[in-house]
Length: 187
Image 1 (cartoon, rainbow, N blue to C red):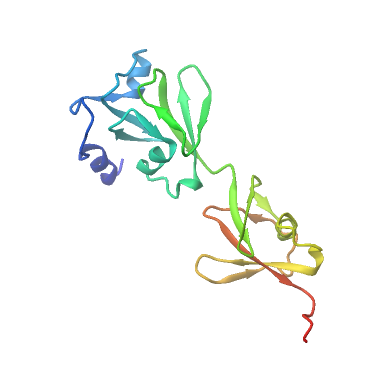
Image 2: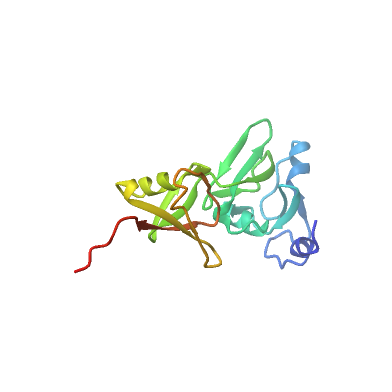
């Protein structure tokens, strides 16, 4: 565990009633004990531990405390005793005093966000070709256009000659612009 995460756990100011008592959710679940309300809660996210001062937290708060940012680039799952993993949305409230919470895990996003000509788009596909991106954005006929990716450093990647080569979707959002292949009429 990193020093920053240790500091995050140990130097928090608490407004919880049981300032000194920290309930380890993983240990409580193994002992079939129900956590009390009004305490501090030690929670495992992936392979690290974090302490929360309130029993009601959101998925966003869990991801932020676990330094999983931007939070939109992660999917949070809760593992309950004797159950499968349950997806937790960013604004979904989780009751840490609920019996049976073992731990949380994060995975890559289920949905990727991107823009085409500054218009927001989404996909659940891990890869799309430039032609698919144009078609999904409603830019048709696709054969009349090609795609250019605007990279985070401001450089550009043209897909003019590779319209069927898959592009790996990433988080944070990729940015694309469409370019007309033909001549633009001059008035």
